[in-house]
Image 1: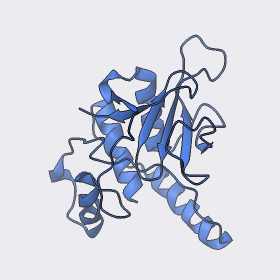
Image 2: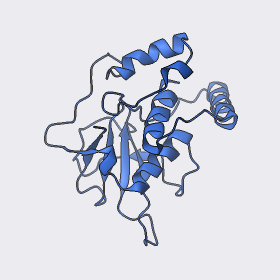
Image 3: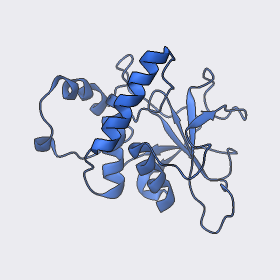
Amino acid sequence: MQFVHAIRRLAAYATGRRLHTPLLLTSVLLLAAVNLVACGAPAPAAPVVDERVAPVAVDAAADTATQADASQEDASQGKDAKDGTALEPPPGVETIALAELPPEALETIVLIAKGGPFPYSKDGSTFFNREGILPSMPEGYYREYTVETPGSDDRGARRIVGGEEGELYYTDDHYNSFSWIVIE
C-alpha cells in the first residue's frame, strides 16, 4: 500500500493535481491480492518511489491520520521501507530533475501510478541490467516502462526503470546511459 501512496504523490506532482484512488484501482488491487494469496504465488516486485528523491507537496488536510499514513512518514522523510535509510544516486550516475524530463516521461509516471493500462506489453516487465550500468541487483529487482517517442513506429529508445527500493532512472538511448530522477 505504501507503493500506491508514494506513486500517487509522484503522479500528483507530475500532473500538478492531487489524484484520488479510483474505486476500480482499489478493486483491481484487492482482486490481485486475493489471487496471489489463493495461488500462493509471490507478489511481483514493483518500484517504490522514495519520497526524498521525489518529494511531493501533498494536501495534508485531505489525508486522514490513520496508521497507514503513519507508516508513510518514513517514506516522506526520504527513508526506504526496509531499513529506514535514505536513498542516494549511485556514484557516477547522472541525475535529472523531474521537470527536465520530456512530457511523455511524466505521462509514463502517471500510468505507473494508475497501474496502467500501458501502451506496450513489455511495460512493467523485468529489466535485467545486462549492460551493467545500474547497480548489480538480484533478477527481478528492476522493472522497465516505455516512454513514448513522438514519431516512432515502435517502442523507441526511451524508458523509465524503477528499482524495488524506490529509485527511478531515465534513459533516452536504450540503456546506454541512465539518469537518476530527482525532483528539485
